[in-house]
Length: 211
Image (cartoon, rainbow, N blue to C red; front, side):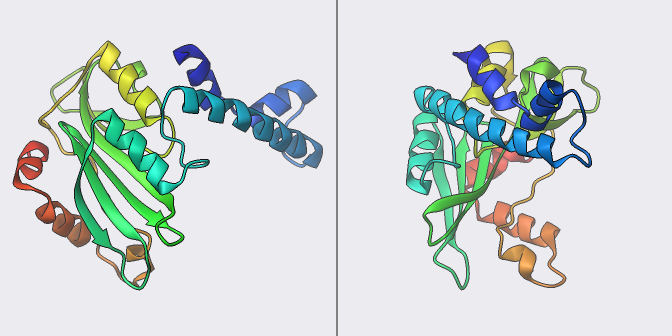
């Protein structure tokens, strides 16, 4: 299952189309259309594998279905705020060492964006599709994040099997705790917004993410 799911999540339809056509997609719409067809077909396979893995897949899940998977993984909801002038919400979930932040869309029916932040000790290659950097003074401890909309359970399992997700952070990743309406305000201060969000988190969460 894991190998099949990894291949599905890593599938690049344009690259596959270029390999089949023997030419680049630049300036050639036929390759682009082939890539789109391959991507559509692969989406069916990816959806099926994510469903069997009880994994996050916001492309085919409602927000409630996505949240049910997140709670099953072991996260708990620690902050829920209405997004002004909408019927959507900004939510933060916590599992020891894992901060998962998400905003909803379309009257709170779908997941708009989701990012999981962490500190990890283990091999770099175990972090599937993660943005990360080594923590200063260490060769195998990383501060990073991963898109939580698709394949989050798979990514966390991969890291846990090959290393350890640290329950208390040694270094704080680059946190972006903003929802889609925050960025529509001219001159918005992302640092101030993120700081305010952190200060609203439960004390035990703040302590765990503050080195």
